[in-house]
Length: 332
Image 1 (tube, one colour):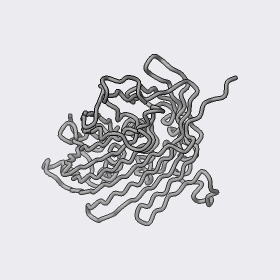
Image 2 (cartoon, helix red, strand yellow; image 1 turned 135 degrees about the vertical axis):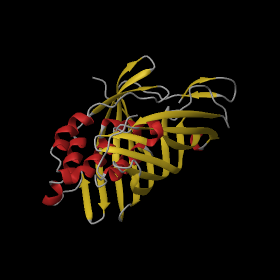
Image 3 (cartoon, one colour; image 1 turned 180 degrees about the vertical axis):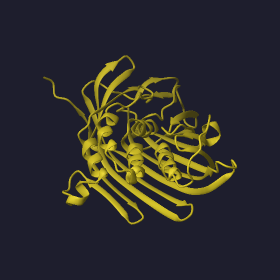
Image 4 (cartoon, helix red, strand yellow; image 1 turned 90 degrees about the vertical axis):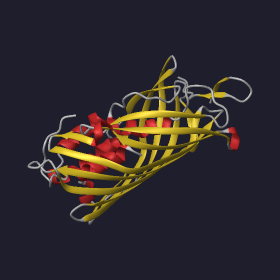
């Protein structure tokens, strides 16, 4: 990957941390008495409703030290609008959305169920929240949980992000990481795409490798090692995962501002999933991730590292099907 130079004060390390965080973190057949092939089951007109909770924290040390915290509570509805063989055409919508972000002295907030102060209503976070709430996004999902590109959110957010003040550029990256098509696909892939491609029995393992486009001229590869732990309550499959991430292309990012070299010193990601045998759907999932990294801004005159930024990133994501969360459209 070719590299370009940048100013040491460009703020790219902070934005890269944001994008890296965003980046990270039924039975159809029985083969033998104890082996099953779990698959998602979607029928046209069926909707499933999930609660989503995201807690994200990053501590960054450069010339000075700062930390940011973000929490998000949402209710998401996934609806099957068509079937294509072993694939389903899906719509995704937010029924409720609440976001709170602390970055030093700055505090951003949006809640779709509460009236906000006039100053908050005019913020880029509130504008993005209203746009997301008004959008029905589309994607396709295979029975294994593999999904296509998510369309709709980028088109909705585009006009808003074009109006962002340059001083709020970091906030724009945070919003895209959460709600852009790439960010939503990363979120859904880690949630929906946990299933194996072959029949499994208790104790069996399988591995998934995901190349994730950061949208900043670089990619990461996430390696996920899954284990079928057996049956949990109500006959649900209990699946656990432990994995880590690595940076593609030696961690060098080809940015408009210049050359940035990133190193990951430690990463640890775990997931616990309960998958309903009867419904062909996830009932619960908890994902945890921790990442330590070093970001080096190269000096143009010497090619040596100038500003060095270290960061520790933590994230916890919880999904849970709302009671009575599966709904079918009424027949005409």
